[in-house]
Length: 195
Image 1 (cartoon, rainbow, N blue to C red):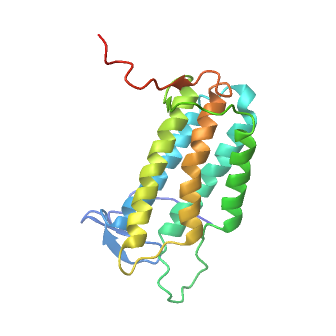
Image 2: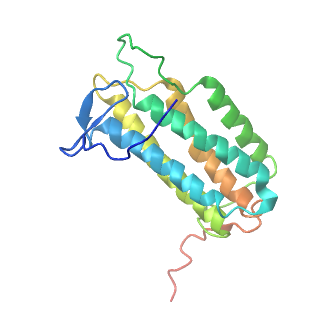
């Protein structure tokens, strides 16, 4: 059980922060950057949810589950798998979470017409918010894969799959929020070249 009585601890005043293992690392460490951007993704998803219309209650429920998953992902990343025995069982993203995200993505996508062009992050506010969350999740993915590529660092396959699928899900969710693609704004290549 998490219990937060005091919000500031002063332990980070010298530019370090604690991992879930208790180890101290620089606040700009690749692992901190990665799960910080996961947290930013979560906030962007939450913001997009505030603009969803009532007709998208199922989508809203899916997005709420994703927000919980993103906290799980942050918890996963803040406890590096060093192979050492810990006093607790670390929380890890599971293949079941990835599979559920894929099922939700496929179900949403079934109701959409195929695209013949890229779309702009435009239309309904909730759709734009979901596109913003998508771009932040892509940055989180870049940072997580950078972390995983560093010597001595590990990231689980399930965590990598989850963050990769998430941006795809958010793209489709944005189209659903745009009245199932009816309010999508298609990119017209070179449209602004003529004055």
